[in-house]
Every structure is written in C-alpha cells, then in structure tokens.
Length: 249
Ligand SMILES: [Cu+2]
Image (tube, rainbow, N blue to C red; front, side, top):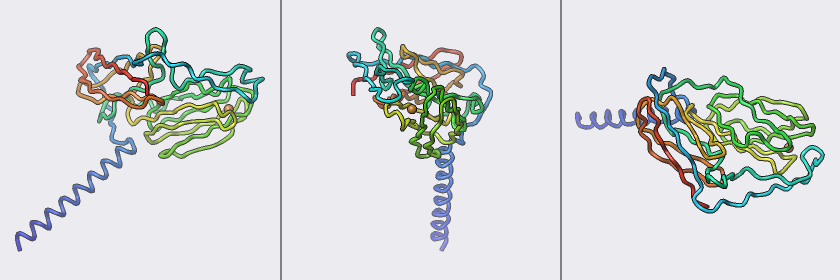
C-alpha cells in the first residue's frame, strides 16, 4: 500500500516536473525568460567572420521592371558579400544563443527597413523580440512587403511610393522579406530573444558589448552558408575574441 502510494506520488511529481519544463520551454519560445539587469563590469565579445576559400563571384540580379526608378543596370546580389582583401563576410548575424539575464532590451527603438532604388536596405536587419519595424518605400514606384513568417503574423501588403507601414515582431525567428512586384528584391529580419547580437561589417567584424561574465554559446548565421556555433567564456571588462570561418557550401 505504502509502496503503491509512493509510486503514485512519484508519478505525480514527474508529471508536475514535465508540465513545469513544458512551460519553461514555451516561455523560452516566446522569448520571455530573459531578465533585464544592470550589468556591472561586463565583457565584450569581438571577432571576425571569414570566408574559407576563393572569393565567390557576385551573383547578379536581373532588373526587368520599373527601370526608370530601379535603374537600367542589373544589380549586385547581397546574399553573400565577401571582401576581396580581408575575406570578411558582410551581414552575418552573430548572437549569444541563450542568456538568462543581462543588459536592457532596446525593444522600443524604431528600426527601419527601407525599399530604396528597388533594393531593401539594410539587407539584413536584427531586432529584439517585441520590436517594431518601420517599413518604408523611398521610391516613386509601388513596392510590396511579403513576410515569410511562421511564428510571427505573416503579411503581404503593397506600399505605394513614399509610403510606410509598421509591423511588430514578437517571437524569435528568421523572417525572409521579399517584394512580389520586383522579384529580385529580398532581405531578412532576424528576431532575437535577447539583445546580445551584432551584424558583421564589410570586413566581417562584429562586436557584442556589455556581456555579464560567464560561459556562453555564440552563433553566426549567414543566409547562404548556414549556422556555426562556438563556445566563449566572457571575462569581466575584457575583450574576448571569437572568430568564425565558413567554407564554400
Ligand atoms: Cu519592389
């Protein structure tokens, strides 16, 4: 009798444990477990993302519509931009994969994704979950904003010349944005659960500041090359170097 009671209690505890774990996972999926604290003596993560191999030829985007505004020449694709000298890769999103607490989330700042000369600018935009993005059309022709969201609410709306719309992104996800009017136009809005992220510059460099000391997994994501992870131990007030290298795919 006592033994069976123990088993029942044991199963009950296990069930509660599983339920609790589920809630934690769900909360994490919603990006809610991150806690803002005042970071004292935070460290910095710096590094470079480089291309391992011969610099790939730049893909050309064929301009075949609205040439008066979009230009008569074909455009250079930004899907993989490798610097010929430094071999640094531009527009790689580098971020801390999981961190329970740290610096303030700048979710209230206005972030802009523009459609200008029939290209998205910037090509890759990273935001914290909960941020709103002003989606602009700086051209004098009609553009369209087609989001390929799965977790966030997807949209597919036209925006007239000089127009603007604002959309909020609540859940962490990589969202591809295209324009259905001009098939060559594409960009990414990368939504992150914590504010520890950066986008590499034209030499593949990045910097993530104000990180509480501790061990973290850090990730580099590039739309054509995929994902790489690395472990880093951040020491207070120090610059901690993490370099990534992507080989040709
Ligand atoms: Cu367009």
